[in-house]
Amino acid sequence: MRIVISESQSERMVRIIRKIVSNMDFEGGVKDFDVYSPDYEDESPTYDIMLNLNYDWIQENQFHAQQYLRNVRAGVKDKVQKLTGLKNIYVGTTMK
Image (tube, rainbow, N blue to C red; front, side, top):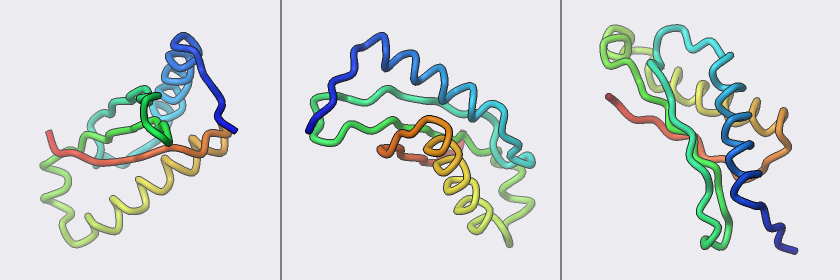
């Protein structure tokens, strides 16, 4: 069964996700983030959360950077899923 969400409901969910992620502590490794609404033309619409990494922090902590990134992505995904009930969440990283 496919559930249809209106554009206003989707924008409201984006605001809720932003609020959840903005209250998380990233220990300096993440500068900021972006949340994108799903493309409902896709077979499986997904909310995308892109974490913008702090290049200097990542360079200073290279030894633990990969583990840190895995933990942060998993933590963000788990918390958003737990608080919203959404299943289709993608958390990615980018360097700015």
